[in-house]
Amino acid sequence: MNIKQDLLLELDITDQRARALLDDLEDQQLSVPCQSGINPPIWEIGHAAFFYEVFVLRDLDGVSARMPRFDEIWDSFEIPHRERWQDGVVPDKGTTMAYYGRILEEVHERITSQELTPEALYLYKYAIFHQHMHLESLLWFRKTLGYSKPSSAEVPPRLGAGKSLGDAEIPAGEYPIGIETNAGNEATHFAFDNEKPGFDKTLDAFKISKTLVSNRDYLRFVEGHGYEHERHWSCGGKRWLAQSPTLHPCYWRKVDDDWQCRHFDAWQALPRETAVVHVSFWEAEAYCQWAGRRLPSEFEWEAAARGEDGRLYPWGELMDPGCVDMNAKALGGVPVDALEAGASPYGCVQMLGTVWEWTSSQFLPYDGFKLDMYPYMSTLQFGDHKVARGGSCATSSCLIRNTYRQAYHPARQDVFAGFRTCAL
Image 1 (cartoon, rainbow, N blue to C red):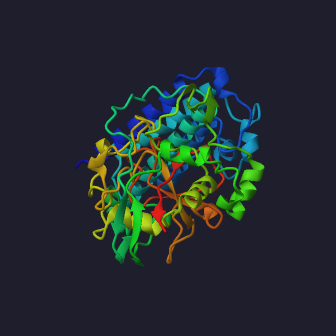
Image 2: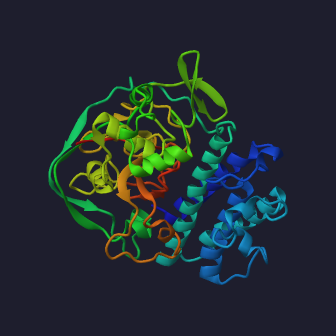
Image 3: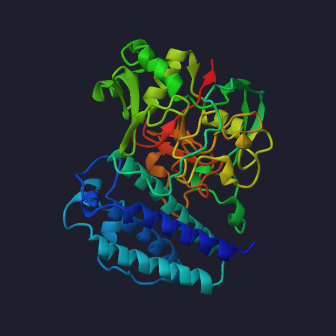
């Protein structure tokens, strides 16, 4: 394995995907009113470049600022969200893309010419993975605003009927949670601070669905007036529903006695066999109450994905993109019972990819938590966010693993989130 070549290839792929998500947008599509949950796409690309500059070029080589006086613009913790949308604050597309291109060229040159120390390897990976997070946010930017799906999207083969495969029975026992990393092994076991340190967790036996909740499943909740009956909703769910009154998921509508959903810029017949997506934690929780089920804890989810041997992916130790709906290819278009080659040791399918899976767990640090190189990776979300696991159809496969923990505010519907359930 040539680690440098792998890094350069991943850097190039990341760059190509980022440019593809911007290049087909018209100028007027880049200048839209401020909305919570999304960022201006030009700011996203400048912020990604700034991250490479600060945590690779400046930290490793002490280089001076490549865009003087703009640190406060590109730093997400210096510029308030609303100001990112104001005219004249963020540089134009041409200026930003020139800055972005220069930074990536310098990073490319540094990887090629400099010694690959464990510290440098970690920083390269961190910066590349950080940009992949923003690739996903660019995708939900396009989805939120009703823009066309990315050119990378493909029509997936119909490899299943979208039927439930029943419950997997997970035996009581001790299961590995999280991941331990030591200096020098980041090439195979990179992890963010919230995944560390690893530990063993004793769990009671439980049953978890082998498949994600499908649109067909969720439609029964909608047509059963689930949004109208308070008994299905927790206190937090009732508050959310009062603030966001709705009778169905945010991208659904009923036309002539049938249901449609909006897929980027196109309304289409609701595909019953695919996973329900863009539902908040509160909606997932209410569905479970209606169905006589519950959400898994994040530890139960990880045990069902990893088994007792603590594998990195449900199917083994190496990522196989053919086992998942990720990388903005199928974009959630596979039936919930498809991709059985990627099943976990207990037969759970699509535990990675398709949709982020809501769990019942609050996003909190593990015992022994230590800040990583980027102090805001996790700390700002601890306490008031829920843990989502597994990645989505918009997530990059290079980023995800069984131990990856995502923090989302429970009210969010714009992200590619769905869920699976456990028996009571």
